[in-house]
Length: 330
Image (cartoon, rainbow, N blue to C red; front, side, top):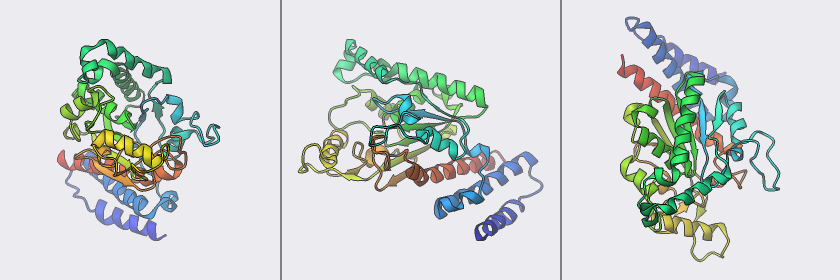
């Protein structure tokens, strides 16, 4: 009841007091954004117990396109997600968990595990072999699918899409947006990355120049001025340790972190160090005890409990985006 009273206070004093001289459509938009800001704050700071009191508007639950990480298939983010016993989850995976949180349209980019073998075709390219190839050389097939899937989702729902990108899906989504520029950004509302390596590698570049190209040409929240919101989520569960035993998460993390940022004794999600997972200009969220891989079902970014650690802040960022847009166009 206290929560309801607080929201009612916001609604009366923050919303109803808007000038009646303002055009009705803009007043409605601002009222909605203010109410959502109040709701988002309540969800973010008071947790899941308040969820029953608040129903967020459809505008804050845009269609979602999940972008798989390197080596992953579309099924890994749905009913094909595996638990530690090797059996599939029973809650629909990331897709099902988002749907239960009010997202009516959740699609996964159609990627099969074998599709990643297409990268080997880059070996015929001189720039790829030299480690200076743009993303289209080896990953053009992925970028084309992002472009097509966004268009389909927008056409089907009439709304701009939120790209929810896991691991390499983050920089690949940025590459797709960058090469299409305004054409694709008009249909994308937000890019939310989960444990994505965003910055150029300090050591060997396993993307053969593609990640460096994205970092150089589409840096930070590159399309934020065009209305694309950026949220980067990092995990800090694993501190890299060179002295750890071979095969341990700490030793594996040290190797991965050193390749990406030039040192391994830093915190990260076991694959991507925290600093590398964030973009300048983005809403940055770092979560303790969160790991990178879907194979850690209770602690990876898409785990049921972990979603509630970053989703309220994503909702808040979208509400803020709506409010600013309404005020600017006033």
